[in-house]
Image (cartoon, rainbow, N blue to C red):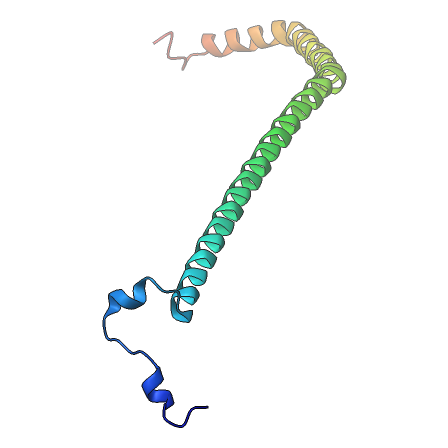
Length: 132
């Protein structure tokens, strides 16, 4: 080292920001790197959000498809139940109803004459409102 020159005299210091703007000092390099990293992180974040949106849409589409398939399956099962189980039940019920109607008609025919005579007898009594 030269004893006539000191370290403080050998450094060129300037307060002009334009003089340091053209040079790459460590702080500017750090700022450039940080900005590049922020841009990279933002791109990565945007890519992840897009991927998440695509996955969400695919999931919703699969759910809608599965729901539609379940509806169709349920309709087929209901139709099969209607044809296989309800049709015979309905036939039995119709047969039972027809038999019950026939029994009621027979009971009416059997008791019709007796009921008609009883009604006629009530009407012919002295205190009947029809004769008044």
